[in-house]
Length: 96
Length: 485
Image 1 (cartoon, each protein chain N blue to C red):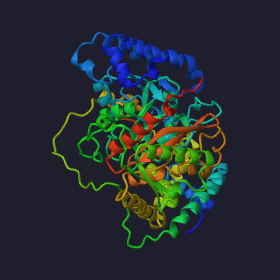
Image 2 (image 1 turned 45 degrees about the vertical axis):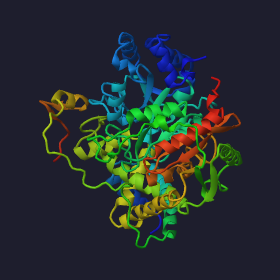
Image 3 (image 1 turned 135 degrees about the vertical axis):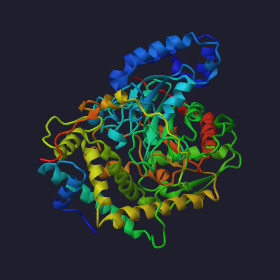
Image 4 (image 1 turned 45 degrees about the horizontal axis):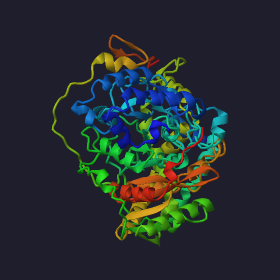
């Protein structure tokens, strides 16, 4: 595992739903490559039999009573929506 | 003398004795903003009309029980990634330029209940990604001590506004050092609480397993007052922890006799500038003089901190920031013919370069074929770093070192090289990886720029962190120095 190619950068940009031009792809390839090379340093650390930490405190399955609460009013929720009609969010066509 | 050179407890006393009106406190804030904001540029949005109206209203509430709250009527600034109902919240990003939150963050609810008055929203690196506030999508913020220097970041506006005397205190957020590093650079007091002590509900998520909101203030006592107000479990944040919040003011005894301090050798090595090292060693002497003892220890996995942190936090960010798609809120591109174009163009036009870089890094680290090598490996290293801290805390009460390897750097100096900028967080990141609390307090100056001392404690032991910080502050006068603007 080492390095990242320009093709991979385009692939990752697509996965992340970002549009990048050739110049940006060039720049990101170099910069991401540097960062990934830095990450190779982690291979030095012996992590055999070490459990991954996703959360620093031992909290698990925080439960609460299943009680319905009043939601936010529709007008409020639609306040920041860029385009809506008849109380529904409108987007460009999904299927051509 | 400016009113805001007084501690919160003194301001409260003035208001209580009717020597100062709340509207005068708010006047003071806007007067100072009028004088220095052009130079410092700490704010993204001011809420002057509402703040003045609220102050007037509060003047009439004097004598009621509500007015007894220690923070009642005090002006505050809020980092712009904390949602404030009806007050524009941008995360310093074009993608949220006109975002008008429809609810308040839990910390804002708590502040409203305590009677603070919000003056405005403070500048930051876009989505809290950065260490200089140069990544703001709107404008830079300048260090009040030297306008050619950065204020630090990402909570650069929050630290600069307090240092410049525009507000007596503010809220920031800290994912890899974003409260402590700007506090160090601006010569103020900044605490990153234990992960889970303060609710993250309404804090726009960057890296959810690291993010914490915390107070930035002039003094340690002020800091304790503000933390007291915002701490506590919240049903809206299932990662907030149900622990009893102690009275932090009671911890400020000035007594550190017998306190055992650990000083990691990794925090004073060649990467740390000589003036910073000398200030830290001199600070340890001060604490020794007060009856504490210190010994050198090792946090052997510290050198892996930056790599592990950038993989993990960017992975979390790539997931968290997927919500900005131009559909439900925020910026939407006017140039999309279909839904896929809407997503791509909205995000590409709305996000700044550093945010895109981290989304890409995170997406890569989580992508098929690379997950085990990068993401899982970094999580395992996180376990090792956490264990480093546990081992040291089995024998010592606090860990002390510098907050940053150098004082504030020049604007433009590091912005073109991401790795140099990332190295800035070398000494603050391990604290976030382990989830423990850490504070930065002023401990010296080099060429007129402040130096920060970092005091790190055990999980939920903010009390001891404050006790040590307060004892040091009482024995020194760094916190009384003010920038000339």
